[in-house]
Length: 209
Image (tube, rainbow, N blue to C red; front, side, top):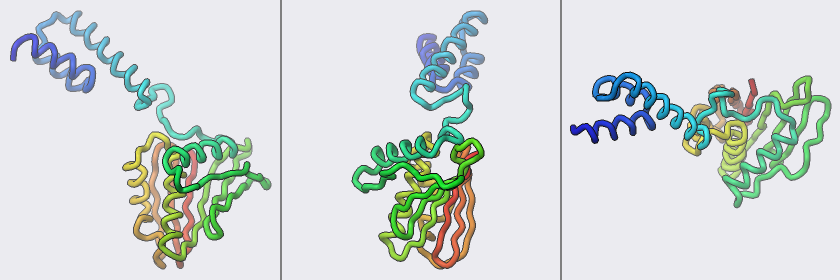
């Protein structure tokens, strides 16, 4: 490997895969120690900047999840934005502002598909529950769509494959319309998702830490 190729490979690894870049630098660099340090710092700074700009890294907040304990109206806006972005043809939206009764608010997507939210003492969303009782395949599909949008709202950093993984963890892709009894839980970022199903009725819960 010529010196030019080694230098190019080292810089590429430092930018895109810093740990491998450091190892490559340690083994193959022909620069002096000070030059190596300056080069490593510059490439790592670029790596951090590029990933923060792309939304892949949040070194200050530690987690890119949905803002914890936001207001019901902020949640509604984010949900509708996710629905418009990901599923504009389904017509799923929370059209009117929530009416808060004590520490609860509700929205009915369909006669047997209801979202219920619980507020903390500061009036922020602490927990969301989706009550579902699908009677056929179309209603099961609707439940999956709404839950997928709920996950996209609460964990905007997840892509379609990751959202599907959450649903697989909850076993809902194949069991949402069955008559079995089951409980499953999974966690993403600052949100704990769980499902409890019994005799065709399901309760999907998203608890915000």
